[in-house]
Length: 637
Ligand code: ADP
Image (cartoon, rainbow, N blue to C red):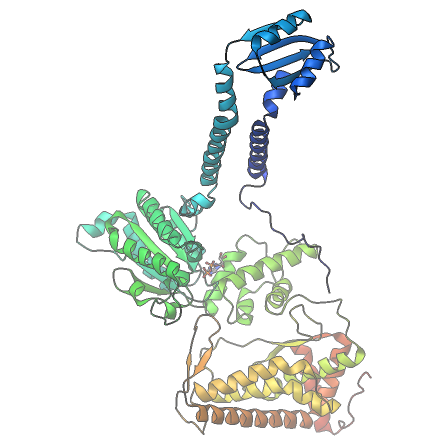
């Protein structure tokens, strides 16, 4: 286990402004406390005067006088201050204090007999007032002053007293500098937003006819598809300021704070109209309110305030609200009714053409060499979103620099695709010979079954170099063209492919490993979807047995059938998987010679291309027809 010193993960206490102001405040506070303490103890008073005073008894005083040790006595308001002749400490006058006892005249006589100087002073009213001020009033004034100062400085820094303030100002951009040209693909979304841009540009054109523009538009789609980018592009095209805020920032632990932030944000935006307010992840506050579970007061208040603000402003001023979410189904219906977020703009995962365009946009400022074929990369990245593709181009550029090249090649791009999809090569993970053999047969099992079934996609590459995301080896497949539909035969082939790795292990080693968990999960998911969603099961026919939740996130399925049916579904899934596994084993057993040959080659090379794979396979086929096959190739032991 890693050892971490306790303080290693601590965040700085004052994230925004560093430690300077906080330290100063603490220092000042300590100083004030010290000062107040000193005053209360009366020490300051004495120290200022350079006088050290001590109480003595009347008898001791008499003895001192009689011994001729007293220099002077001062009487004031019944108190005697005695200054002795002997002064030991330089710079400090030592005196004694006592109260007058007996007759004053007697004392005066005694003192004059012993040659002691004597004064009588009128009662000191100024001294006592000053003393009172110093000990009582001043500390109070200082304390109040310190508190006022502290509150003010907290307010400035957005501390406790500043919670209700919107943070929108921090995110406001006068010009985003992003235009529709920076958003590749997403043509339908851009088209819907074009009229909004036009309106912000020239509101008069619409208002003279009496047309009202939507107050808000909701951008819906999976993460990374460019929703924020589109919102920025609208602001950039219209040349208006862009206020951006994540919905989760409205809600803090204090009830009422979110509502006041919403108010603040709209006020600020109205002052800057025409402008765009962009609320990211609106589901954080816009969740439907009718849930029976314990309500979240703060969130509801914030949502109510948002609804009220949206109703309250006049679109002719040119304030447009854009919001983004990837969970539209959980939003409160009140948010979606006409007059609020009445437009819904779907920002889907890009298709092949869209991916090529996105790659082009991001490759614009990257030097590419002549080998680069962005269409090929787009084909290999089915399902990737804009942010993945941007990331891939950047990874490829970094790889090229790392290898000391001046331009990015196709090889860099393909490697970057793998880095984003399965992680970096993990060269320090050394597999034992036996494990290499197992992984190798497992991967060749997948690839061979893929090649043997004509309804599956061709293999691009097989590797047994472990990757950082956990894979010990994998087969990369690239479709010949993008598909939007899958036939039942294709899905059946996919299931057999998924299970072929495990089948190879069992066939060759007579034992199985933990390496197939991911394949099993994938195969089960496909079978389940075929039965419950696609109506591809003979047993259940066309009955819809599940509904999808979170379409844009994990696409989780929820069964909507009785318990008995759910059990039957499980049995059916089991049966289909078992059959597919048998098919995989059968296919591999029939082609054991090819599997052995390719696996041996893979163990040596670690990574082979689809072309090399096919060459060996065809060679084995030729040998088979020529009758020379039959002896399995030697496999590294
Ligand atoms: P979302 O808000 O949908 O989660 P973002 O708008 O934040 O996604 O996108 C993240 C990044 O991905 C962008 O900054 C951009 O670099 C890239 N990107 C996403 N979609 C596109 C696209 N259609 N065209 C160009 N770049 C894109």
